[in-house]
Image 1 (cartoon, rainbow, N blue to C red):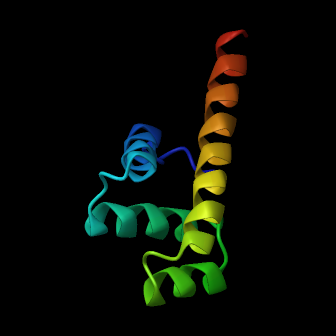
Image 2 (image 1 turned 90 degrees about the vertical axis):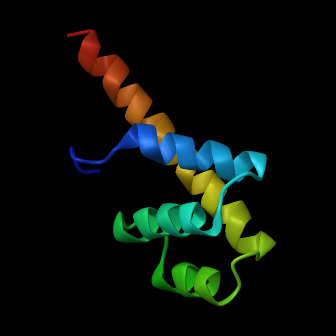
Length: 82
């Protein structure tokens, strides 16, 4: 995970996706982040692009996004303890 990732933006996007209020552009931004970050495969990214509403894709993506954000928060927590 790079240092220049805007985790606040990723968190906002994930929350909007989870609540069902994300626009197509926001979903695309979130998926592009996950793909470019290596968090999802090209196959998953391509499947998203061919069927944006696939429940299978969104189930996997929501889990991956949650893991990324949890890892970031843990990293911040442990770095503040030093």
